[in-house]
Length: 578
Image 1: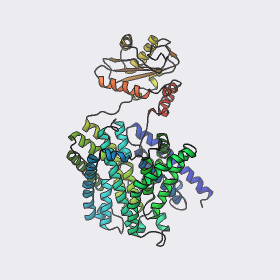
Image 2: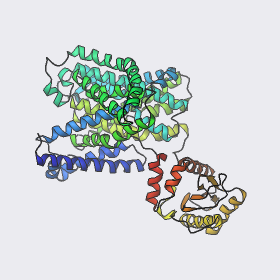
Image 3: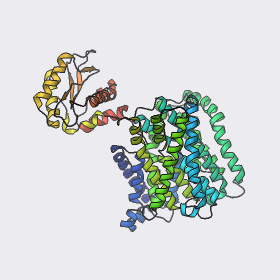
Image 4: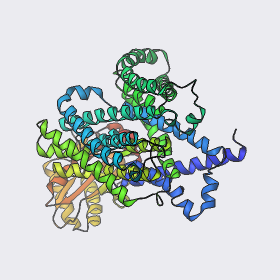
């Protein structure tokens, strides 16, 4: 039992870790990177790598390595990663495999076999140099390295496709379906590997408590892993789909469904932990079965995702930095070898398979780039292997670096192969200096003149020229787009980059909109004369973000630029992802 002082230390350390993880995750998102990059960095800063080097006593006081606190933190992180795998499983869409089965199966096979073979060979021939754990046979170690090279990260891939507006295209469906197959095969293989390790398979707590009389035999554990996965994807899906309507009809909503999801998750996790593999396997496959049900509402799915992704997931990924000193265990040659094997294997396998499936060269390369993202899944895989004694700290660090590098590069490479530009958001071209609440003008002409002056001054172009250009457009066609929004705009010469000025009028301004509503939100758009594409992209972004009347009504009440941003984000206009 923890003492009063230990409980205090635990709460302080968890609050500090979670707070810094969330802050750095937001910073990572701002620069276009996955949240997991910032979350891991938080642990690196507070762990032995940075804080432990600069102030060892402070690190030990906050995150002691002895006593009851390490076990408490381990329990918390185990629960966190278990819930995160529930969410990851819910994101899988098994129907996509059936719709795009030929191309998806070929791409998946290429994306599994080639990197698996490239990873297996050096790991089998030089296990100690590659970072095998003490006492691990070359065959078992090579199986893990091959699996680690082959697995993808579905959440990161899905986020990249959404950002590039490819998620609902045929290309996006092919990538998602192939990633589904990759993840399912990869986790089943890894589950079998852990089962084959016997008592080494679990983390320290389960290994210490297991006994010959309470844990299944090794061969039975391996069989149960495959059987459990097959059962959850067939009978389990059918049972959950049948039970969900009863839960929704006879329990409080959404609490009843949330309770059902979490109870099912932890019970399945407990079962896979008991059979000799990690608890996350049970949570993952329960998530797949739950997410596949047509009765699971989108709002419930979103609630579970947000609850886990912004509380438990940051704790888990930040805790990774507390486990290993990334500076002392960084082996540059090993990192390069792992990165080259992973990228070459995935690119070669997926791109070749895409061409064999009859896809164009550019699409095949884009699929290969998307499938190369490893993200959180690779990091979890490496951490479980580290806890099981399967790999050394050196290889774990190399896998984490590889996961982060491939995740950060995937989106950029897909854009380059497809000739696409990054998604444009109009708020990125506005700021507190170009935000006005309320707008001084009380008429349409005066409001356009006010907002045009602010935009022109920010863009350092002639004010009268910008205002006249916008008013000339107004004479041809009113810029009121409906439900209280107007978008006066102009393209002017001499402007180096686009400027967006946002003005609010709580009382409303008569604008002549088709729906007759007074305008409360004015978005003045000023773009370079030569960049018609950016102009259209910004107009599309404004229309998408402010298409919901409820969003407009909430945004119109903002007093500051920060309140305006908060209004359009909390209304569901923007989403984040791992």
